[in-house]
Length: 446
Ligand SMILES: [Zn+2]
Ligand SMILES: [Zn+2]
Image (cartoon, rainbow, N blue to C red; front, top):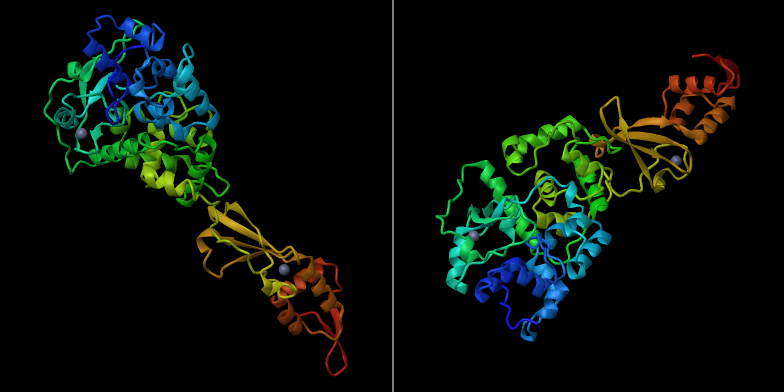
């Protein structure tokens, strides 16, 4: 057990606390710290997702009692990943962070597939640094600036700066550098209010900060994919069967996020012959797509992370362009015509109109009609199938010599041509023989 461990500051990385300890105790060789605190000689990924935290906690003096989950939620970057992975994987990673020694956390999380690399060095906000020194009498490493995409401090609206502490340490050992050694004083660089790119970066940083500060945010990759597809459908980027209008989507995305900005964030869409990550995000929810890319996409859809995860993702209802139903049947001879017998609508892509259309078919009489989604609120519709009940009614009327064509037109709500065409198709006698009201037999061929 060690005699002293510094209390962690708000939003401080666990790494930062360990680095302050090393500095205070004057450890020149950090392997001692690793051996004493983590029972390991190599904890290279300690900055983002440290492992073996249970071991660390068991070594701490009793006054530093901290629950392991609390430490993970408040002082590591795991919360940044949690909404985007499956619950099973999240649990595995949490277990590894608590007890794991050897298996790499990053790989379990699926991070190897992600191409958004961490910044090359530890980073900080010069204004936050000033505030920390004033409040705590020392600077420390915050969580947000260590994430790519967090390029501007949301609180101070100034750019995040690189420190002199390199993240990628070539030899496999880890070095703990506290912020008071690594953070050189720098003049804060403010953002330009007229630069739309800066506005995008502010939105991203606000979203990252919000996610990092959530404790039990979880959606999962597959549910997310469904939500994304629904939202794209609403915005006209897919057919109603969910087939993407690829070029339209990419063009709109580029319009919102210029290529230069995407490159800066390691989120460029066209990398060699690979499928653009944007498409992978929607089509194949396997593996972990970098959280930053999800956030860019959520921003593209027009939501903040908070709006998306607290409202959209929770209240996401299936795509219902025609409302809740049930719907009316328009067959004049259907006995349930006015009692709204149609409970389901099938949505198909209409190739003729290049948009989605709903097919409504009556379970009572078999009558079916089609409506375009863009005309959901109008009365325009096309009959797809008149149904067996309507056809039987026509047959009966046609074969009844006392019925006139005019009556048939009224009863069946169809024009004379339709009535005759269907009668012929049904194998009825044509021309038909009927009795006029006066009783003389006449032939009605017209
Ligand atoms: Zn700041
Ligand atoms: Zn009906």
